[in-house]
Length: 284
Image 1 (cartoon, rainbow, N blue to C red):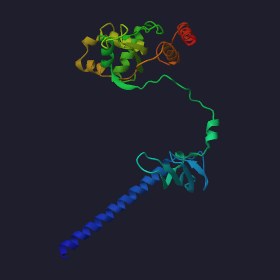
Image 2 (image 1 turned 90 degrees about the vertical axis):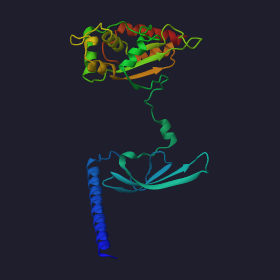
Image 3 (image 1 turned 135 degrees about the vertical axis):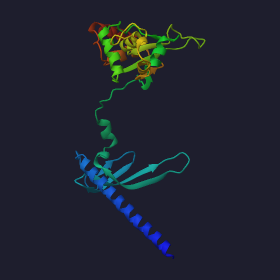
Image 4 (image 1 turned 180 degrees about the vertical axis):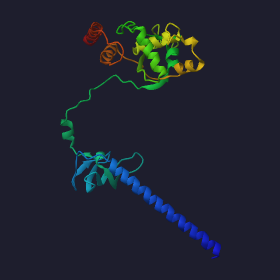
């Protein structure tokens, strides 16, 4: 081996030692931070206890560490795949205490009280911009803002002004939910005069429309008088939006009654009117 090769090999050894040392320090620091940040356990398990862990069929405790903050576990599960024979998989692993749960039999789980209420009304919210809301209202299909369960336009000009102010201060302005009504027989024309129906967000959408069309000023300026940047900020502002393809009248009334929205509180007389509509639908 030439002197040059020996020198090169020594450099590589020194570099490897340095990398190994840095890696060891990194792992030690990471472990120290993790231990300091680890929340104190509110439940503890003993060696040999059976616990629930993820989707594994059976898990037991092999060892405990750091005052029951960490556990060494042994897990077993039965794998069933469509194109391969069934087989048993197992692993030994280390887990934080909060990833483990008390083991309970099927009978014990069935006996527990249930807090979740069954719900047949489902909305999946997504992000859209104000431009798409305005287009949806102003295009030829349109949104019906006045189904029988909705209030009139009850927001004051001050409340509408605060909504526009929230947009320019980048504050969330709440959710919008609409119902998509069925198409007519030819598939190119809605069965009703307007294709969409406003379920939640009428007062906010009305304020957005008023500002865009120049019926509402913000700090003395109408939309058409704003700079291009401020107009773009308004039109591109992101909001939470969802639509349902079909809802019965009973579901609409029920959903409206359970909504907790900001703005002007719903008048008790109006709530009673919608409640009576719901009772009539449920009695059919």
